[in-house]
Amino acid sequence: MADTKNIVLTPEGRQKLVDELEYREGAKHDEIVERIKEARGFGDLSENSEYDAAKEEQSHNESRINEIRQILATATIAAAGSARDLTVSIGTIVELEDSKGKKTNFTIVGTTETNSLDHKISNESPVGAALIGHKKGDQVEVVAPSGKSRTYTITGITR
Image 1 (cartoon, rainbow, N blue to C red):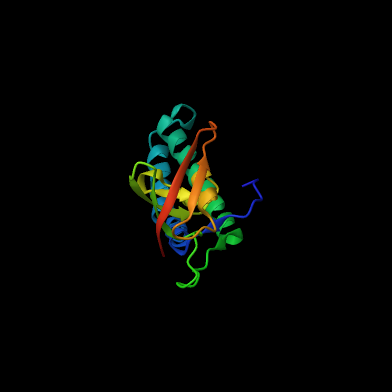
Image 2: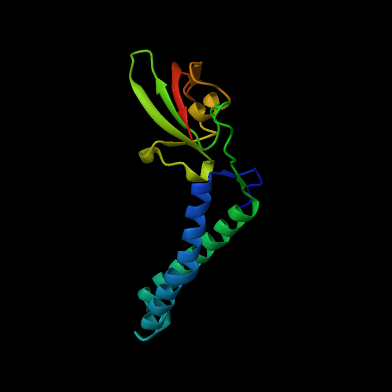
């Protein structure tokens, strides 16, 4: 990763990366090696698409292993704050209410853990950045990259 910005992970996000690294260094690596051995048995390697695909997958796997190692070596793990002084930070689940009364929950995570299908938003996204540091009851204005603005009320924060 040529990017030198500080990566922040939740403890769960760190564990997912550790698990992925274990899988890629173990079972995935062994699977690829087996595919390469099988492909070699098909004959001439210069015209062997199975061999080329297996070698490409091996390269991709090794790149991802290196990327994960770099993230784990440089990432900061978000620490849980005190329950009394609960503000929005990485690792918190935030309940928002829009002006029409519709409620939505988001988990604030580091950039590498973002998953919109699981309602995990980055601390660097427009919504995440606007929420960081606020408390329950605060009204927060979120400006989208398009310039459109929305106001939300924080109705709940949990860890």
